[in-house]
Image (cartoon, rainbow, N blue to C red; front, side, top):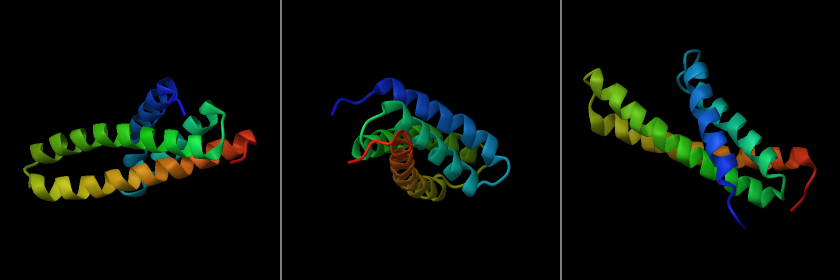
Length: 116
């Protein structure tokens, strides 16, 4: 399987932009919905089987999660919050982003009609 980095980068950008927008409504569920939508887009873009869509969605969640992790640490530390507490919460959120991105990739691949 060859990774489509174009789809992954587009998915990561979608995840970050939507996480900022949806995060204004809900700090917990907004970014999760953003990563799910990004995973669906990536899974649809790769237009292959569900496993490949899941892998691409997970990679998009991983890349978007790393950027969100760094931004979260910078923003949280500017408010004087403990870096260890913020870091732990963001690492857990990062793992959840990877899983949700994979689920979105499966959904996006299923929309194209391809099977395993």
